[in-house]
Length: 360
Ligand SMILES: *Cc1c(COP(=O)(O)O)cnc(C)c1O
Image 1 (cartoon, rainbow, N blue to C red):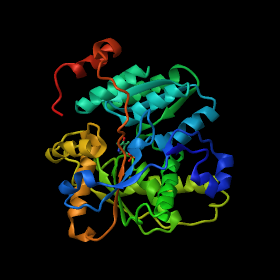
Image 2: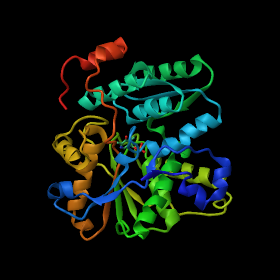
Image 3: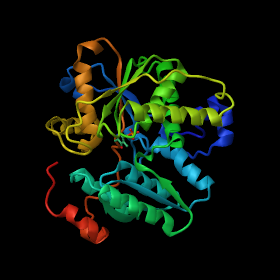
Image 4: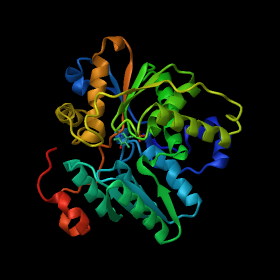
């Protein structure tokens, strides 16, 4: 793997590069490999995985490809600070804290509540040691209020919404489909009939769907829903896909006259349980599988629930003989915070999340 000098998207649609900023953060292509480590648990040995967990030694997962566009855009606009908002265990806040710091931005993060887990504790310590300013929001209204306050406090702020979900960011996963297509062309894996991934803001799902359309692939993207239906549904996925496609057409001469069909996708609803971040029995049971698969501790919000959904799909009669690709979105690379004392590095508002041992 190596750091790319330009995205495949720019090579394919050169006029995009005149309109959009981009900076290299990712080592690509990320490997595709069979999920042999958990073949017994899946009851299948022919499921593939795309290892976006390895995309950067600093921090991996599905935010990195997006930030190649997002941070470059913030730089292009001359912004010096980034304000973002997410749950207490937010992967996008971690990515913002780490890559923001590496590229010279001051980062402020506002947090809303989610169930306490060990992953959450680790995420907060990563954010703190990366030097992010941490602001506790709690409930949704207070979080919005405090986010606006942080944004307005000083000039020069760039805002990254929860999930880093905007059309600029989504380009990262349109690009990723072209990367996969080259791997298929080289014979590293067969063309997938199904691509499975956990879905929150739907940005990654919609972008992969657009990429499949541009490639002329018939692949169906299956999003394992990890938020409530009000946040992830046919309307939101459709809106994100249309918004991203419109943005691409507006920015590219090559695409301006092109039409594409709606993306081919489906949502799986069975893995969520009570809501975003809440452990379910099935997800807790799947956590050791994350460890086996990626060599890092799992978490319930995305990775464990995604595996629960994947397993259900892989075992269903309808997918027999089909090529399934699990697009792994969790990072296996994180700064080691095992020796860090939370009561020293964290603001007092966050200390309560370290009193007592979480269930998972
Ligand atoms: C952010 C994140 C997702 C959700 O991606 P969306 O594009 O917001 O749907 C899934 N998995 C992991 C591990 C994430 O960090």
